Length: 298
Image (cartoon, rainbow, N blue to C red; front, top):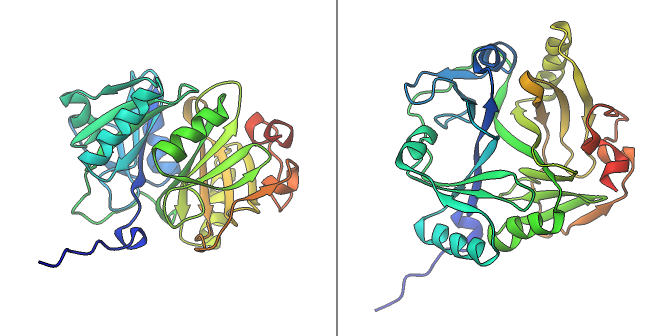
């Protein structure tokens, strides 16, 4: 009997995927208007979680979680066997983990979830089978949003946090700017960026848009509504991603991005110097967020 040959890893797709962001909100109602009227996401009606928002084929990519203690990001794991392997590896390193309850899984619209804290204290939901929607994504305004593109995370324990992403979750470092590390989990340059910091938390949540025109139109849209732009328009030299980052409710930062490069098979991680032109080649400087400043990156 001939054994069935397994396809190469590249054809099986990524082992992990970024699937959602849950923001801890003290007052989710005012933030709900921001999600639809400014970001342009589609509200999802649900009795389990009243503040869910779509950006693509997934059931949701943003949750405004009233009463949650801290924000979290959802990372889809391929299957139960892989999740068990990860759970054992996390336990061996003494990282805080717990199995999500049935109600917590229902609120996240996943079949199973392992809730993890990295060495910095960032919460990561490792989930199985996050829900997709059978309905076409219909945005609340024509922002040109194509989906959740990436997140920036603060790290006060860079080496330990990188070990979680690479040695345990199987991601890879694609490039560095000073000590900032871009982390690739699929064919794109990065989905997660780790920024050295003295605290945990999200630096930004980035939604991709369909064109440079859409990026600039959104930039003007945000400016006209007197929303503070904290960084950009600009372009990251490492990823070639154009971006504009702006203030959102309760201190969260949101971003529109376009042009994030695909990784080439022979790509090797590069080291960029910790200076302003390595963070934004267009010369845009960020004075409000320490993690996006050259001095902090080094």
